[in-house]
Amino acid sequence: MGTYRDACRRGNFVISGEIGPPKGTNVETMLHHIDTLKDMVDGLNVTDNQSAVMRMGSLAVSGEIVRRGGDPIFQTTCRDRNRLGLQSDLLSASFMGITNVLCLTGDHPVVGDHKQAKGVFDFDSIHLIQCCHKMNEGIDWEGNELDGAADFFIGAVVTPEADPLEPQMYKFARKVEAGVDFFQTQAVYDMDNFQRFMEEAREITAGTDTKIMAGLVVLTGLGMAKYMNRAVPGIFVPDALLEEMGSVPKEEQLHKGMEIAARHIRFLRDNAVCDGVHIMAIGKEEIVPEILEMAGAVDR
Image (cartoon, rainbow, N blue to C red; front, side):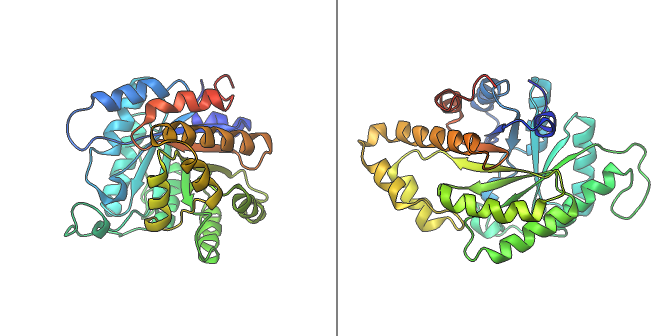
């Protein structure tokens, strides 16, 4: 399998997975997930202290994915580093063979497990996108010449279920203007809503090569679905899916969630709604191969 960038540039229906670094030094499960997925997907996101919870760093894990023959998508947030640290990590990523970068502002520390931590936010995600472009041109943020340019494939996120949607579309347009190569969306479950979002998004990206991948978080149970509706901004699980999850016994709900994810992959691919999917199994990455098989997306 080629690189994530190659898949995007060829116009493939792109599929990526996600790796969550451990909170601790035990990497056995994480390495198993990497080895399970690296040859089945076009790229593997590595989260960066997701939800402001302290974990092993995304740079080190991304480097390990390269070493194992996969293609990482290095997530980096502006929450924990100033512009010096961000640029230093980007140069380090380039040295390690990491070329895909997902630029994030980052959740505020108050939502995480170190609530007294000070968020940096010297940059926001748009600054970081612009910075990656400068480094591709062989200069740093201040315009100083680099001894060797980077070659980053630059990504960002968007939330199609944001309410109201207008501020999100304004930021989306600014990211497109800043030169984003690809977007991964936050989790989407309502395919009708997502199609309407894509119509507006395609108008904004017209004339560019920007790719948009739908984020799919696998529902592991009815309780998870209800929690996401109640507590996670920008995510909406429709009543029809809640009823579908509740129609089977608790021990069968994970498989039902896998069926729903596979159905959504088929719908998005067969109707050319977007350019690919980003599958988030939230610690259950071993189920992703079966989801891809159910979706008919193994041999692509």
